[in-house]
Image (cartoon, rainbow, N blue to C red; front, top):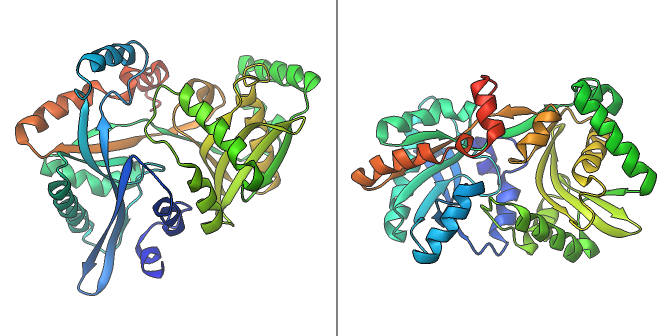
Length: 361
């Protein structure tokens, strides 16, 4: 742990987060950790994972439906074995120290190539790289990698003293609509919030809500096993926050978040869809989270990817994330460049496409 922490960013998703992943039964992934030494000193550390990836994973709408039809005839047409630098469950942060960061990144690639050879993987990728890391990872573009924009992260500065003050930052139409939703819900139901460090007796109930939400999503990159929620509470008791919402003692929503240095990071959510729309759970739970942030001195709230329409209306800031990808076969790598451009999120998400045109992303 001490060695890892010397080079890896000081974020919640670090040593104990990856320990929790290691101890959990992830069926989709095999996990690796690459350490780079200069003489006896650790100068680089990064998590990696191996998976069977389907290129229709990020499709939505009609293209998704068309891909399902094609896969019925050719079940594995979109599949590829891929080794990815990063984590399936968070942004692709990399531990690099020293002046020669490019050499450390190249050492990561060499190790990934070795894993790919041993595991018969044909594609190497760096997942969800932020703008800060892109400055050093861009060196890979000279080594045959293609850079494409992924689904952006969303975040919000908690620089207001009350939820009403926050509402005043929004457009008149959004503010009026939210207040109407809140008045309606508050009149008909009492939503009780409890914040805990572990799920304990609520585990099965919460996991059922998570599976409901996963089933609703068109984009399913990872499925979190139930034991991860146990392990992360055990390994990260101070950072782990479970927000549990109940109606008449029945759990109707939960979120797993991490609190680190006045930043609250939203990881996984679950809703009871028999009441989610009736009680506007997306917005009412958001109100409770923001109020909790204000009360507990949180300065920054990072929400999850996707669901960009409502988050744009709620005045979240969109932060670009990049994917670097390379096929080990030179000819197929040229085809991969074309495919990567076709699969850019803005091609399937109208909100992202419009923000791109407006220069806001």
